Amino acid sequence: MHHNNNYPTSTHTNITSHLFLPFFFFYFLLLLYYFFYFYSYTHHQMKTIVSLLLLLFSVTSNVLALRYGEQCDATPLYSSTWQYDDSCQNVYLYCDPATNTCNYKGCTNSDYMKGWDLRIHGYPERCKAGTYCPDDKSQCKPLVNPGGRCELQRDDECAGQIPICLNSTCFVKAAPLNGVCVQDITDYVSYDAQGYALRQRIIRDNCIQGTYCSNNKCTESYQNGYTCSQDRECISQTCGTNGVCVNGPDVFHTIPTWLWAVLGIAVLLFILFILGILWILHRYQSKKERAKIINFFGDNEEFAKYAMLEEDGGDEITAATTHVDHHEQGSNKENNNSQRTSMVFLAHPDYHVSSALGTTRPLSLLPGSNTSVSRLRNSTPPNPTHRLSSSGGSITPPLNGSRSSMPRASTSDLQQHNNATPSLPPLPTLDHNDPHYQRRTN
Image (cartoon, rainbow, N blue to C red):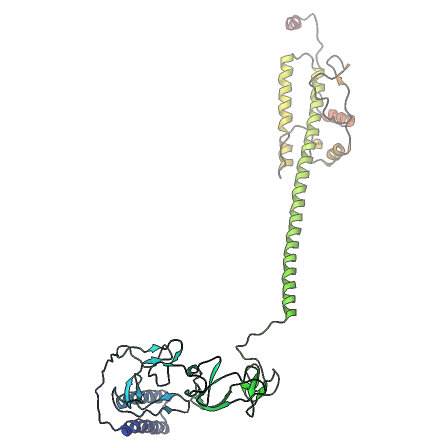
């Protein structure tokens, strides 16, 4: 393996001096801190001074750290937090117990190490399945079988189903209820954000899930609500601050069945409510459209009745004026038909106003008149069986092609219509000896 040796080697080094100087310098910085504190410096000034001192300490530590190939003590150094360190005190090096010299690290348990610079040395590889990286990060090693030696709290170094490292020995977490068990007691010291030390005792055992080791015997764990002193005594693996077993913050909370039922019924009722509102709106719109259609065809029926009244009035006038020739009668009939046809049109908001402006009939016969409309709707007009002829009011049967099959207005309506119609001037008497009449008849 090729190493990028950027450090000078030395075969004669006093290891004790390398270990003593950093601690001496640290206590010297601590004394300086208290000195500045008692002289009442401001908070900003104190913060600046401490930052400069820490920077100086880190630079001095790097200078005092051992170099590649220098002699070292392979005895592990564990702090109160049980974090591993050795005498090399270099992020790139570890103390090789085979040669008692500092060598480059060959493996890692993470993808990041604080202070590692890839320009100085390549990042070590992670171990594959079936191997592990020890605390000194020397090189990957095969897993340890149950009963073998492992490093402190390194369960990942042991092989087997649910392995666990207790008292630096590999076990399998499979001790049954009331079976013999082994437990490991470790005291940790951690620091909070304010820098205060927190002591924590961790007790682990090799009992199966739902039990814990008490007096070297696996005992059943407590349900939620029971008193406890450690997390391992609870089935939930969480002992609250009040000494009662509770669910941890990362435990999935089961939703009760009745709550699922209430939620389903609420969703179903909401869907039915929406469908009911849509059905009511549909019914309302359908009624409005139906009323429009009824009004439309009702108005057309009334228009047809008014057209029949005009037709009957036109027939009487035609019977009285027999001196007009047949050509003029046909022309007048076409004009009357066109007038009747033009009176049937669709209803619109300005219908009554436009009908009043476009007709010469009395206002009592307009659709807006309540008396005439109600009378026309309630009366059943009889079918006339005769019509006035052109010779002095004699009764003649209806001619072929006439509108005798269409419904007629009642006699009372015709009389009222005739009375309302302006009277015509008297017709002149015809003299058969008049040469104009003889020439016209010839």
